[in-house]
Length: 333
Image (cartoon, rainbow, N blue to C red; front, side):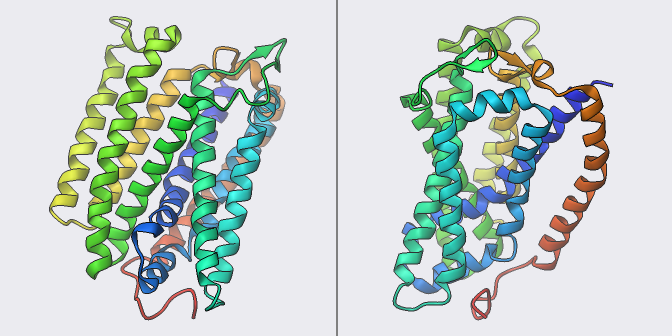
């Protein structure tokens, strides 16, 4: 069995689960500036209050799995991305504190709103910057990071950060469409439409820019006939985009979020296809980065028991708190 490949798939699933689940609650915070009424903001936070901390389980699983299973990749990526990683963690701390304190105060509510927005913005931007740094490549010499302290900071990585922010806002808007009603829901439909258009524009730019500057990605996507099957991804992405915009136009409630998740899954798959088989692009493959097979087998036994438990309690939480949020009750009670 190819244990390194199995673990690469498992960690990829964990990372996507984090993006899919924590993405919408980060997006809700990023939408706060467009929802000025205090009661609307209360409802927005109450839509994610029961699940937001559990969503971050997947981030811990992905990061911890990378350290345990692919220690060489971890030892290279962390020095290259120290600053955005630390910024992301600080952002998550600020937004977590805001959750707990915002409903306990009256006079300082604006301060905690700002903390919620700023922390979420920093976390989302940092994740996008790390994604951009992976795509543009990381300098490695003798199996160690050999770049500078600010190699992660380029116009392309900043653009990727903005794209992730927009994507999370789209997920947040479609989540609110599903969980709210009245004027808040009507504003969420509009926010979902605008952010979807912006997100598609960002994906299109990255899809055209990367093959232009990176021959490895260009060969992966444009070598005939090997790449023919990959063109199903942009076609499916177009289908998902049309489905999302139509569902928003028709004022459907549950489908926009599902269409949005489909868009993220296809973009995520495109990222994986663009860098495979590398964990550190163009430098270290997943097999070179993997721990010994004995370690991978031992860890896999634990994952076989752990992952179903995480999926089960996550699914149960979402099932218990399904349906619309009552504006007259919530986290502050």
